Image (cartoon, rainbow, N blue to C red; front, side):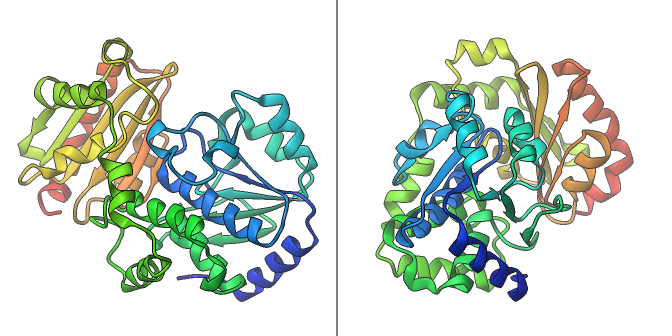
Length: 340
């Protein structure tokens, strides 16, 4: 795990001298994004620092159990207040994202802010920051935040509230430790968090067994009516339209994890979830084995991410046209998919 000591020393000084700190996450924040921000938030509060979390838009309802979510400011909802906080900040953290463009409407405010800027992220090719902690080998932003905290202080400064949030982020971003979690260090970090007396079963239930009836019915509908399986390419995909989202009372976060479902099918190595989202087509991609969805998304769908988990976008094609484009690309990857 790459934690440069020189960057730790710079961050120590920056935190000590900062009167006001802002923590930020990416647009459409997920459990790792929210958990990583809150994990650091609670530690900075222990140091009696003035700190504020600002997220670009709403986070899913099933994350509201995390301690202090009620103190998060949503830029889309309270733009003026959020902008004032960003302008006031001496230190701004970018957590779980690598480019300010991933913060949507917050981008300009963050880019124009005069504060020192820190990145803690596990996605490839980050922007240039004053202080950088970037490591693509780490399971999650939450684990990387925990490592940074330990290098700044020690694990003793992490209280139970911080531990709950960081554990939740790691658990969610690894799919209950089913991917991105092969390194022993991840489990050593998780063991340390469990020593804080957190209730892992409670956290798991809140993350994965806390969905609405409408979301469950939507999942059943997609699996029975919308999933397309292409065994000749060991690929499956699902599409979801705005009309279908409205029919099932879709809320932010309801589609979380849907892309993983086809990978439970025997011999399926590549899964894609395509959804109409605010005027463009949003794609999630997952793979098993050696098929690199990061490179696939970068090359064909203006996206990227990790080897086995990535995302993409299309602003020009319609929903079924994106699906057709995906299918048309598969023959050139057939050997990789079959041997993954």
